[in-house]
Image (tube, rainbow, N blue to C red; front, side, top):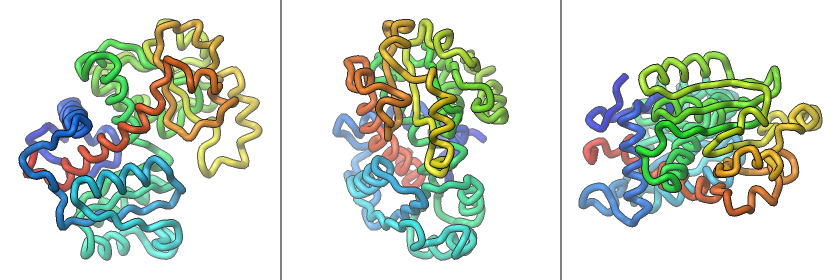
Length: 319
């Protein structure tokens, strides 16, 4: 579907729910918010509106950035953690949706199973936003694009650059593939065999890239992957829910760590990580704290991107 500025969306479950024009609009709106402005004369556009924040998974950046962002826009965040809802266990998603839509004006959910989000959105009369699922992390990917745009000279500067992701082909990699393809940013993923991104995500990204000219590439060689990169990105090797695999994954991924030695093959690359980081595993402290790291710019930009998304979802009259 088209989601350009004249066509607001009523759900944001995947980066692919936004086309290139909509991504550009969200990033421009986020930059305006970060600069201290507000789209339109209304300084509290969510005044009198409430947003339910459902967290199946613990959170630092996601929870704080959404709570602060909603409050700055004049709205009221209502945080529901773990068993307080029992999404998919104590109550089926459609019953949660039909209840919450009587109380709040939007739902933000951070879940394990992506199908729970799909079921929520299908049953709900208010907007639903994906704050993370095992399939995608779309808010993170948009914040990553914003951080890169800030360091490279603007949104238009993303097209034709080379982003390299080294590590597990997880939900972060999935959303980055889709977001990069949409804006013409070349993306290469280096993962051990058996840990590549989901084939359906790769196929979808390559389909989107046919329109933008982005190159979507997969490899198992991290040194080959980072050569000539403009930015190198990594994430934890074992995500929440994979703790029992952590030791095995540490052995499998050991040669995929972002170290100063690996970055010697990409001397001009920015360094990225979505956090939390396992220092000494997927990235060294020397690199994460080094002068090429934009990790905490990414973290900050979660706030501004999510505020922009909330406006697009909840105040389409301002678009």
